[in-house]
Image (tube, rainbow, N blue to C red):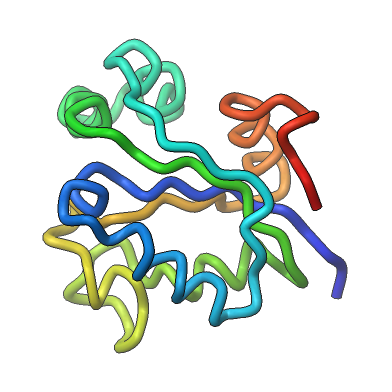
Length: 140
């Protein structure tokens, strides 16, 4: 397996409850390295651009409003098969369906307030990383 990079957001429901460290501990325990990280407060417009792929879905407006409601932590993770590994660590979108020990099972409040976001494919990861980070910020 190859070393890969993926993108992560610790969402407003988690930052509001001061869970960044606990979530990052799970990420690092899974063998992923955090190679870039920053805390930002997205505007609704920035959230709308980031989640444009969901623009036609009924939850889009609520998602953008939620993502702009509190600060988030955006980060780049690196490791072997990082995309799949991080998706496993996150757990299912709906915390009721998430496996024990996953971030969403342990920390998510609901399907909408599910504490974390992660890229679903190499192409998506590259786009999402580039949206928030300049190349010089990625220190492997």
